[in-house]
Every structure is written in structure tokens, then in C-alpha cells.
Image (cartoon, rainbow, N blue to C red; front, side):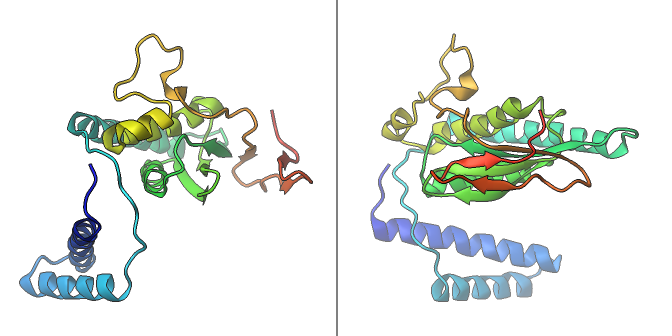
Amino acid sequence: MSLHPRRRSFGVNLVMTVWLAVIWVLVWGDLSIANVLSGLVLAVVVTRLMPLPAVDFHGRVHLPSVAYLAYRFVVDLVVASAQVAYQAFRVGRTPRSAVLAVHLRSHSDLYLTLTAELCSLVPGSIVVEAHRVSGVLYIHVLDVDIAGGVEAARRNVLDTEARILRALASDAELAEAGLTRRPQRGVADPGLQGAPSQAAAPVCLTEIGEVAPPVEKGGDGAVEEKGERP
């Protein structure tokens, strides 16, 4: 799906205006005509005077994949909330947190942002840094043991990215990312389908209350870990 630039800009501004007005009403906590109108006026002023940079979208909305993306997000939200609640009331064990570098398939600003947002909205994980050029997300995981380990935590991020691409990317973008519209059966690890190698991605493991081990760059720009725990 390719929209005319003016139509695309109008559609994005309309969605942003409505969204800002909704946020304004939620902040006030009172659904009234005055709050709705003041929110709309403020949203129009913000979108006109402080427009966001244009983000090209050449994808195609695939409704079944969008529905599955929403379904899996709700499931992940519920499961992660239960895990964090269990961890909060668990006595005698210190969570082992980690900062993971995850190399994404796509370098698109749109898909990278959506992946970062969905991962940050799930309790127990938050994106601390994103590199646009390299397509790498640095994600803090509250407890890697509950997440199933470092590689399982990385797969969760890559699974989220794959569902976003299948829901919104064009066929050409999917092929470039090494994915198909539907997950292929018989693949040994569907979550890693088309994903770059994660072998050299740095991992900083710490326990709550400890200082994270320093991360330094070598002379060739590679990331070297100091004091990494097994």
C-alpha cells in the first residue's frame, strides 16, 4: 500500500491529533465537552507548530496478522504481569537482571519503534537504548531466569518484531527480512527465522543492588564485556 504524501501526512496528523486529545482527556480524568474541545485545540496547535518528522510507510496492513499481534500482546501482558507479581512477593531470591543487545531484522524506523514500544509496555522489560543505523535494541530484563534465559529473552523480542512485520510490512519488506507472511512450519526455531546472528551481541548480567559491569569498545569498535557472569 502506497499513499500519496499529502494524504499520508493528513492521515498521520489526524491520528496524532485524536490521540493527543484522548491523552489530554485521560490526564484530566473528566470526559466533558470542555476537556474534549480544549484537547483538540491543543492537539492541533502541537501538530501544526511541532510536526514530527515524516516516516515512510510502504507496507500493507494484513488484518489477520494485526489481530494475532494484538492477541499475543495481551497474552504477553498478562503472563509478564503475573511473573513480575510473583517475583515481587517471592522471598529469599534476588532477581538476576540483564541488559541484552538484540539485532533486529529490519532497520526501518517505524518497525524498530513499534518493536521497542511493545517490548517496553510488557512488564519486566524495557528498552534502554536503540541504534537506528545498526538496528539494535538494548533491552533491560528484570529477571532472565523467569524469562527462560538470555536467548529466550532475545527470541521474545524477535518474535514481537516478526509479528509486527507480518502485520504491517509489504511482501518486499518481508522478503528482505527473511520472513514469510505466515510462519513456516517445520522450522527449527521460528522466532529466529531471518534474524541476524546474535552470537556477538553483548550481555550484561547483574543482580539487583549490584553495579552493572562496565562495557567498553575495543579498537575495532567491537563491544567488550568486563566482568560478565556466566
